[in-house]
Amino acid sequence: MLRYAFSVVALIPLTLALTLFGAVPTDNNNAANTSVDLLSGQGLKDFYLEGQDTSMSKLARDATKSSLTCQTEGSPKQPWGVILVSNISQPVKKGDVIQVAIRARCPNSITGEAFTTFAFEEKAEPNDKSFFVPLSVGNQEQTFHFAFEAARDYQIGEAQVTLFMGYQNQTLEINSLELLDHGKAANISDFPQTKFGYPGMEPDAPWRALAKARIEKIREGAIRIKIVDSKGKNVPAASVRIHLTKHAFAFGTAVNASVLMNDKSANGDHYRQIICDLFNTGVVENDLKWQFWEKDPTLGTAAVNWLHEHGLRVRGHNLVWPSWKWLPEDLSSLQNNPQALKQRIDQHITSILGSLKGKCTEWDVLNEPYSNTDLQRVLGDDEMVSWFRTAREADPEAKLFINDFGILSNNGSDYAHQESYEKTIRFLLDHGAPLDGIGEQSHFGWLLTGPDRILQILGNLGKFRLPIESTEFDIDITDEDLQARYLKDFMTTLFSDPDVEGITLWGFWEQADWKPDAALWRANWEIKPAGQALVNLLKHEWTDETLATDSNGKIATRGFLGHYTIEVTKGAATVKTEADITKTSPPLIIKIPAATN
Image (cartoon, rainbow, N blue to C red; front, side, top):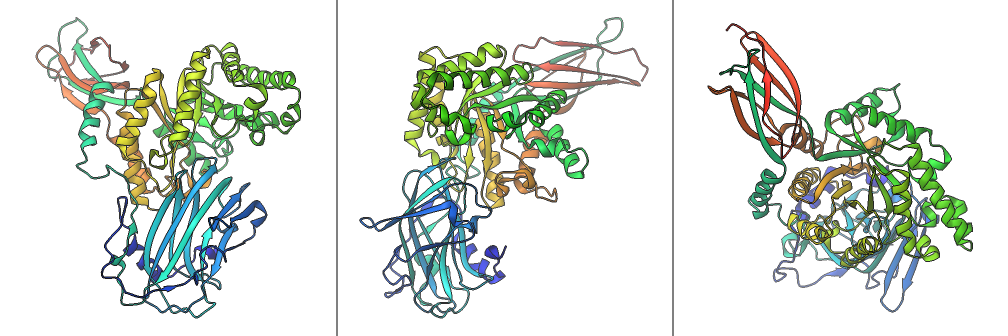
């Protein structure tokens, strides 16, 4: 816990250094003419690893490029469980302006981006910080620029620069790091700043009006209702409330099966209530994955049954995650026996789909084929087609998806991953795989992709004429206002795309979220700004209006497609009914008993 301890004073430089929208370098003409290299010209050479989880990391140095590569395998308990450290070799005075430049990229990770937190801090506990900032780094090399004021005097040996590396299963390549002390004569505004935000976040950004028009066209339908009495006569001036209770569009969440099925705690009650109030789709986060299912299918089955019984559509995740590290341990021993390996996989697909047949409306058949290829190397790419065919035979009614990360995230900059994903989809279709949908995981860090770029990527995938779903959406950043703004804009963007049929969050409660900062409710169930943005979208910004029938007993309006409760009142008589509104819904005729006014 001490790693995140800092004084109020330490927050001030951070608020000065970070504002919104892209990285914008500024003119340095007013900067001090002299500066002190706090790393004594050594750059990355003096960095070393420390922390309680260093056994999970490997540090490699490239003498030619003077770069460092830190590979973390496994799941450190805390980001500061693995730390890259370099001691500050010069004294620093309170108020000195310190300039930082970090050049880095992510060669590999399970989400397509690597995470780190840069800090300038006191060497001794409680490690009070003059400055810290969490960063996410994509596959393409990026340079981050910051400037801050030292919060106190530091003598030689009292300060250090750190990079937290305790993030699971990732590789971060750092190609340069500069740390220059410009003294008190400089101003923070003299230096370039990396400013977090995303293109199109402006209130008057052109994409907003275009998205609104598309939503009205593709997500709304005509609602036509005629009210008659028991004799079939028109009933004028009747009050008709039309209330959307469930969207046709899939709004879902991943669920932690243990929390979901815990009926002996208030936390379980809160958890289940939010699921029922907000979502129409659910996916079990872990317990249907092969390793979990084979160890004990009881919890996963119970969670699926609960979701199904409470009226939620259920996504199955996942059938084949084709890397040895995500598969049962014995599969890697079958590398030299392809026939036995194939049989083992087919048996699993048939078994789990048979057990849950009719309860999961969708399945991620193939998960993350870009970075997980162990099975394909042994069995060949054609075997991917076989997995889909086996799944179709086991449950003909379930929609079968491919699913991958890194397509929409990181400013949409991972072109190699996008190209590979499209080639894999085309390969499956050309070879007769019964592929029904395309999954986009949508895990975001600080590199938030603008709506226009998202729509461009979705448009590229639209050529396959398959439904697209955002299957694992979360925003793992600590700026809660920015998180809330992006959640609203991302969901609005996807809702406006005609090929997108659903958005599933990858969790919502801090105590049951794989990335707690991404959660929408805190551990004590206090709602965060992003949670409130979600509630506003799903509960407030939808169809709920009351109209009066005209002289012919009719009302006509438009509303979101989905399931409605309709309440008609005339005098003392009231009738309630339910109906589905689709693009082709005929006029609805509702009878109400005659009543005196």
